[in-house]
Every structure is written in C-alpha cells, then in structure tokens.
Image 1 (cartoon, rainbow, N blue to C red):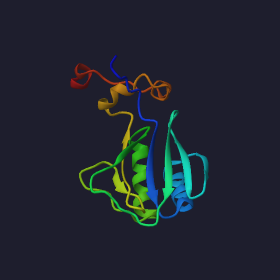
Image 2 (cartoon, one colour):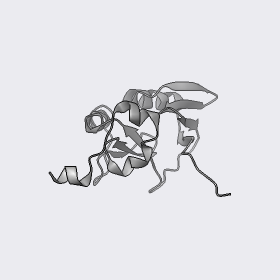
Image 3 (cartoon, one colour):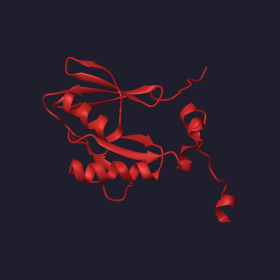
Image 4 (tube, rainbow, N blue to C red):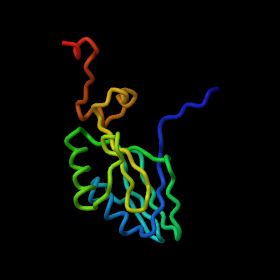
Length: 142
C-alpha cells in the first residue's frame, strides 16, 4: 500500500530567547500559544498544525531552508510587511511578496489564500469557511 501524506503537523524553529520569539510571532501573525516552558513554546498554525520554538545557545541560520505561512489576502500580507519593516526593522528578500528572516535568522515566506497554486488546500475547512474561490482561466480572460 502506498503511503498517503495528509499534510504537515508541525515545524520547528531555533531561537536564542523563546519568550521574545513568542512575543514576536504573536505580534506579527497573531499566533496563539498552546503551551510552553523549559526554553520551548508551541504556537498554533491554522487548525491542525503548530510551530515549536526551541532555545539554542548558537544559531545556525540556513541559506535557503524556509517555511511558508498563509494569511487571508494581499491586505494582510501588506500588514505583515509593514510591521516587519517599520516596527522590527527587518529587511524583506527582494523578488518575493513577503519573504524575510525573523530576528533569529529563520527564513519565512508569507503567502495568501488567493494563490491558485494552493488549490490543493480546498478540502481544508479554513479555506472553505473563508469563502475563497478561484476564477477559471476563461473568467480571467474576460
């Protein structure tokens, strides 16, 4: 029988200060903390996933490894971009709508639900509840 992957359960990032990282991700993305302690924290990502935040003594940022977070629309991407660049003085990676490194060097891309390449998300309740629909090529040409 072939293996059937249903999605990603969690991601893990490394930081030097878990409490500061939780505050950063709560502020920028409104993430809800599930639990934490002993230099670690868990934040809810969507309905069924979470992000684990672990403290380490030495950070080793990667060159291209990253993960993507989804927000509702382009307006929310702009809100995230503004907060990252004005409040946190972070630089966005050129050539991307919203691609940045957090204060600990973790690379994150932010996309939104209007991206047609995300059609595989349609079964998820969040997308259905959001009322996201995709125009056919014919409708776009009009």
